[in-house]
Length: 292
Image 1 (cartoon, helix red, strand yellow):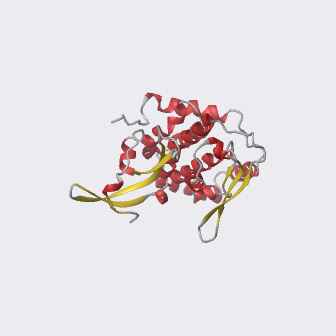
Image 2 (cartoon, rainbow, N blue to C red; image 1 turned 90 degrees about the horizontal axis):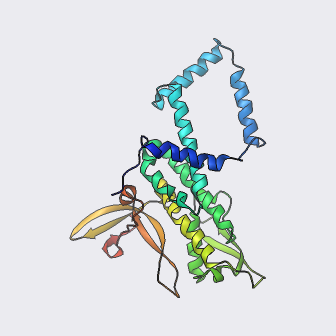
Image 3 (cartoon, helix red, strand yellow; image 1 turned 90 degrees about the vertical axis):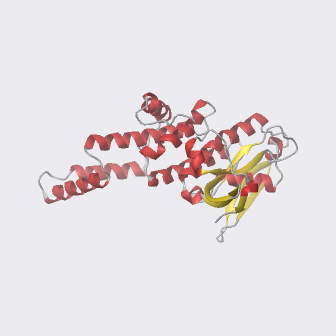
């Protein structure tokens, strides 16, 4: 079993900082409305005079917050915020990166439980799905409704579209100039498409597999962090039954031609936590009751 990464490991902070600045250099929100709101809020706090009722009320609220979050001092608070921000930056740098940084999701699984609250995990799940959706915009022109990533999984939707339209190759996918996911009020999903007028346009097989394959592990991480994506099934093996919590996952099928190149599997949450790099799955023939 792979060694679990901890906050005290030598390369933990170093890796976060490296990937953090790789993403952050050149990023600026100085002109955004959100930034202006934060500046005005800061000015309001700076305008509070010492030893006034407003000052003591604010100090009391801060003390309650620190106690509730089990933060011993302001230095500890600063370190927690820096660590959270560095992790956020590292994820934004790594998703869609066609390099070893793409495997950073496996590290996050191992130490995420130590440094992230459940609320933060669920936000991270949404954020990862949002980045995956952006990656699918180009070169596949695959688009989701605004904020749909809070409810829907872009990889699942792409696989569904490809399955329903019998798309097995990059050339077949390149025939679509525009693919837009439509979410109806009753929760049903449909697709609005436009065909490519330029018949010479192609998506290389390398780009096709590279783009999708490098996102699958991040899709797993998002589903792991989001309990709404978890399901349960009853498994019977060697006469014994147990309830297994899992999430749906995808992996590429190698050595197959003239068939859909990806297969769906059920990944147990506990096995994923122990070692996310090993693609374990629940054997379908042992499932006696699903989605319970």
